[in-house]
Length: 301
Image 1 (cartoon, rainbow, N blue to C red):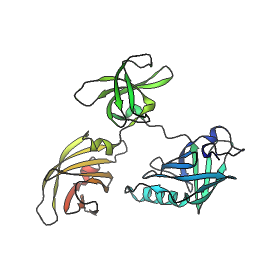
Image 2 (spheres, rainbow, N blue to C red):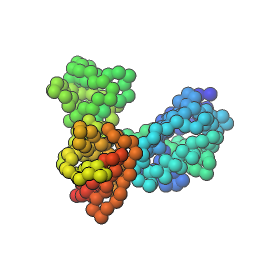
Image 3 (cartoon, helix red, strand yellow):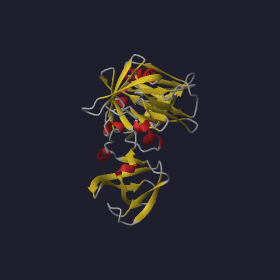
Image 4 (tube, rainbow, N blue to C red):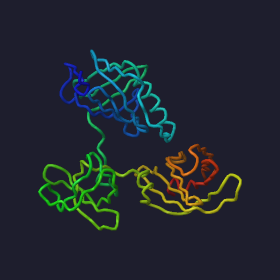
């Protein structure tokens, strides 16, 4: 049967929505904006850290998941986010009971000793405060127009996944429009529908070398002396962020951090890494590379 409709006679129209935000897990408010999207015969979403997808169906108010969900393998920042992911992956296995609250149209999933409360719709990004945005939700390209209306002429086409500079958003007609500019040498400016844009995360901006801060940190090898290495840092509003470190021999190390919690997200060297907490810094080892990150840099002090 069609899962996105949930096929439950007791459901109201809003509760039959296919997109949901996981608001609470075992009574505790979630972090990282975890989501669930139901589709015909499938389920996908995010634990707030990793994305997941799999096969699913509904029968007699029971969400049937089989086989195990496929998930990305990104390291989660912090014990709280890791614990949340563990609870959600435990929940989304086998048969899960579905309970609808007719008063607020929320949906509760209960299974394997875990309870999650879902509310209709996906989290709304804070577009107005995003300095950079990414084109999303289009098949190929997004029309960039000369004005904040669909009647304005198209001045450019922005491909899916491109990062653009956001000059500000405003309401226009039946939708929100953002004034954007390309960050390449073209100098193109225009307006794009906000529904096809999402804030560029710190990790995406750091990877694209769009930094909020630059500087130097000590780096070297396990058996060699330390020397200054350049870095660029992009930070989120909550203080977390990402760093791109320029290692010797034109190699790069991409890190994510939240406070003193640091993980390696990309490296030209080894995939394995370890961290060591000092009194005033965090030492990251990736393969034979060793980088010392001052706490003042991580905390933005």
